[in-house]
Image 1 (cartoon, helix red, strand yellow):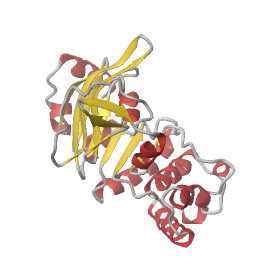
Image 2 (cartoon, one colour):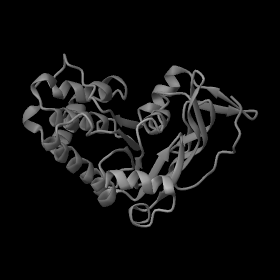
Image 3 (tube, one colour):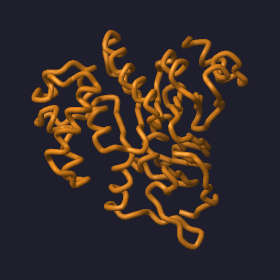
Length: 262
């Protein structure tokens, strides 16, 4: 893949320029441009099929780009540039990058045969090569942060959906990531369980964690996010502060979407 843009330098945790992605003949991302500053929270809104989740998955190379470039922490994600061309990294190199990018999915993705504690320490011990005792201590601190210290020895099947998602957040944080990605983290939850997950995310935002959140929770976007992005048809249609996007919407497409969901 040819590099069509120079890699910029600056105080950005995420830089995307001209990101395109195809699935067969279907183009899902059609030139996405986005920057996210360190320590900021960016929420991505949009209708189903707009490319939000695909774009998020490109940020840790779960999906490979077909054109453009994407940097996290000043590094091209999944590729290295040489002679004006981009070459895909080896799996081991991609794994090293992913260790710095935490991701929380819609459906928890916990290991069912492991306890909560085992789920959290697995990657730090076997990927980061952290001493097991230190990993356990850190895991217990994280369980305290998400309000689940008493569930350390429980198995995922015994937890509510909200509890499982909080464990998933703790598991991602155990790797001490530079960036946290959330792909509609409350969409699979019963309404009464949504608040407990959003409260954990509010706490992370208050601590200065850099976060990119694909969500339909507009109240969270208004309250917590520094930047709100509206995607449709595989492109960023509009972006701005919560006040700009919700109260002074510029584009007809964003107005129509918000008019249906607010």
